[in-house]
Amino acid sequence: MRILHTSDWHLGISLGTVSLLEHQADYVDWLVDTVRRERIDLVVIAGDLFDRAIAPKEAVVLFKEALDRLLNTGARVAAITGNHDGADRVANYGGLLDGSGVLIRGGYQAIGEVTTLHFDDGPLDLVMLPYLDPQADPDVAADGNDDDSTEARSGELDARVERLLAATHESVLRTAIAAAAGNLRSTRSVAVSHAFVAGGSTTDSERRLTVGGTGTVDVSLYDPFTYTALGHLHRPQAVGDAGRVRYSGTPMSYSFSEEHPKSVTVVNMGADGSFTLEHLDVPVGRAVLTVEGTMDDLLKRKPSVAEREAFVRAIITDRAVVLDAKKRLSTVYPNVLEVELQPEGVPQRVDISRAQTGSVSAIDSTEAFWQAVIGQSPNEAERSLLQRAVASAEEVSA
View 1: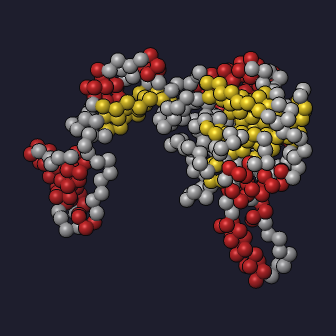
View 2: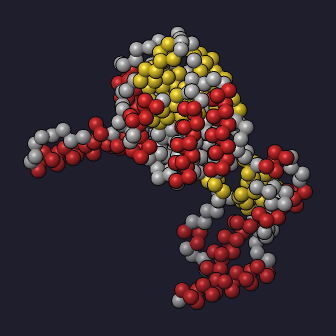
View 3: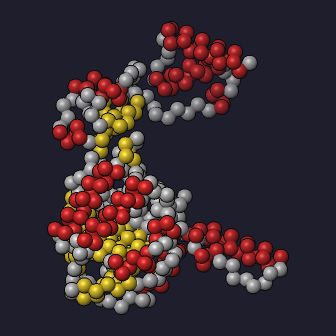
């Protein structure tokens, strides 16, 4: 049988001020054609179906149309919610859809469930592990004390707080996987999970699951399964040495840190659980590109067709003031979205402590700040302008 692994659609997302919904619709078109052409039996979508819990109407409609069209290819679909999704909103009617060939799971509603799907070459155990918020675990937060006294209620509240503080993504996921592993029956199994597995390579696009690294999980959690289709990290990659645990990555670039190629993973799995992998490049959506240099250098460049088509972030290194940078650069890069001013030789972080500023005048502090940002002292005209600005501010504050 053949499984197509995709994830992190983030339907409804924008890059800067530009909505990517049109490009995401192109991806759905390509995906449906690919599923039909490649004779895919099962499509798995490993979370972050939408970019936010309350998705815009257009994104919800696109997702529904995607499911309809994928089913029309003859494939089945298994989708889970990620940390961006509203689990209850997406998965509330999941059980009603099972008979249609679409399985959707979210939150803690089906922990430990193993769904056995039957294909021409035999059965496959499917375990769906949506993103599990540790603070929403009903077992962690449960109040099992029948004693209604004030002292008992206070003690139970303290115990619940301790359980909530101790809960991590790994602890709740370990419990869910252990429950499912005991129900596996087939010779092959696929887990669909949304998690940050330790050792994975990140981009600037992922939202942290928790603060301080407690959101990471160990790859060994997935040892019971033949193949694990992961979502959350946006870069296609395998985690661990065996190659059985893999991120498919996003279908297109959602930040300027995602200049890597995009793909989906096709798993060719035999009845005995042996499998091989194919990676199909995604040819739709605009690439992202960061260019850097002085305005003169950037305006003189002759970008390729692909570079002109890409969404562009421009880092301007001029030390002098640059006016209308985005408008001027758009003549060379029509899809320039971001412009950052990073004068060459000037530190990007300015650290002027209270000790440095507390005993000096406002104009001296202002000139020190100018020196730190610009990299040189103000000339006479600039100093005169700064003095007038500081004097005006002092007059207003008085």
